[in-house]
View 1 (cartoon, one colour):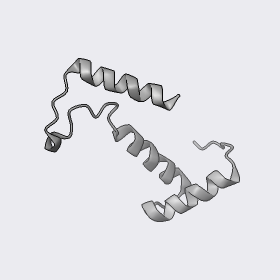
View 2 (cartoon, one colour):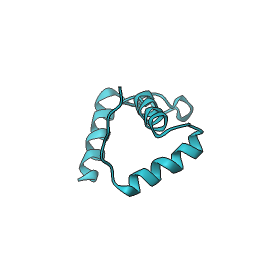
View 3 (cartoon, one colour):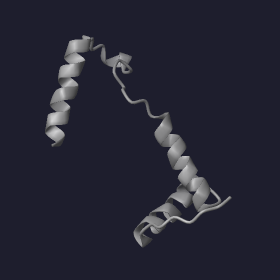
Length: 73
């Protein structure tokens, strides 16, 4: 089953460029590739960079995340 979605012309151009860089055969494959990439990103990267040897407590991590959210506003 297929369906039609409305996107701006600039979005179509971006998708076409991504089609080339991702070596996909269609816009559908390109969109699915983007979705798979987005789903593969963990919601939190807390504790994943072991090379830095920074040991934060849960409280410190939450305080850091809170300060980051305040900067975005």
